[in-house]
Image 1 (cartoon, rainbow, N blue to C red):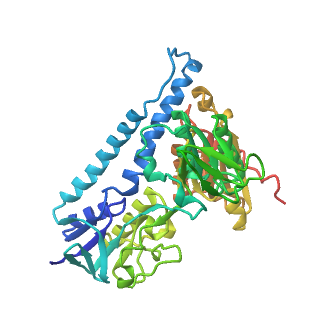
Image 2 (tube, helix red, strand yellow):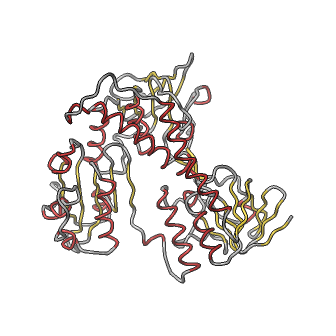
Image 3 (cartoon, rainbow, N blue to C red):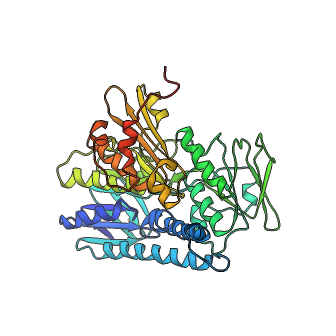
Amino acid sequence: MNQNVDAIIIGAGQGGPPLAKRFSEAGMSVAFVERHLFGGTCVNTGCIPTKAMVASAYAARMARRAREYGVGVSGDITVDMKVVKARKDAISERSRVGVETMLRGLKHASVYHGHARFRSAREVEVGDTVLQADRIFINVGGRAAVPSFPGLERVPYLTNSSMMRLDAAPEHLVIVGGSYVGLEFGQMFRRFGSAVTIVEMGSRLVQREDEEVSASIRDVLTEEGIAVRLNARCISLAGDHGRVKVQVDCTDGSPAVDGSHVLLAVGRRPNTEDLGLDAAGVERDDRGYIVVDDQLQTNVPGIWALGDCNGKGAFTHTAYNDFEIVAGNLLDGASRRVSDRIPAYALYIDPPLGRAGLTESEARRQGHSVLVGKRPMGRVGRAVEKGETAGLMKIVVDAKSEEILGAAMFGTGGDEVIHAVLDAMYAKARYPVLQRAMHIHPTVSEYIPTLLGELSPPADAS
């Protein structure tokens, strides 16, 4: 059976469904294809379920600290992982059902549940149906990368997806990878009662951040009893009788870590190898990401790629912004570009890290003469009042142009505070504009003008 439509959208992650809605509202016929779970990574194995679990872990942590706040708690604090999982599953299911219900309710859209493969640059096959359109949008997302560590084929391992199925806390969780996914799972399962060891090949955690931010993150994790093994240059795995051994070959400490479970958190790869892209002539790079231009068009006219599969971002908000760029350009007469957006993201350990723009290291490598403002959260009144003084605030500006280059807010509320800086950056406001703003007291955000009033050159600046 053949069907001709105005647009084909492949994949129900964060970019595809709202694009289908906009097209349908514009009177365009849409064929929407999803082979697995509606909502993509964010709804099913990423943002929504993990942040639901982070909330449970935070509640456990605060219950254990209750007496610090004058609150009496009788008996031991326990965590029922089956209830944690059920709560997380229910939240994800509501989102997943909501996405599918919205799509199936669109006036001009047909939903196909199956695997999509290109037959040509204008044809997509789904089961016995061949869909034809002059505009095709690929939104197939990504999945956990599984490196070829020696011994991996003989050891059961977890990824961010299979972690979502656990309904009991591991005795000892060994996490290979010291960045966002690994740290979030590490802290939450430590709070659920697991012993946790994080193994990182690099010399510090979350190496994209400045050194003092990485060091502060490590301090938070080790204070909670998480073991951190850095410089793990030769990782291999072995195991028997329900145990795993991760050979790390570090310069300090035991050369191996014994655990009950191992989580691989070493990056992502795009879901692009089984779409028949060669039949459409769509170009991919050497890592499998679909090559796109500044407006998310591929090398083949009439085909776009959105979300994690295009290598232009690895977050829900970048995928959704991809939708906004494509919809704006095609439907609103706009001229939006990927290069117009400012990098921004958050690390959802407790306290969270909010990041926008360049780090100090990146700014200096790019040739900026920088001024830097820093303040430990222990000198932020709101943090002291809440009893959550871990972390620091940092902002970086260009000394000549007074342009705000970037900021890191690692502390209570940091994932929300960062937006005050991010919005000023989008407005292209020079830092004195934000410095002279009157913020509400008592908040964490009120210290942003203070940071900007204390700018100085880095200590090692010549």
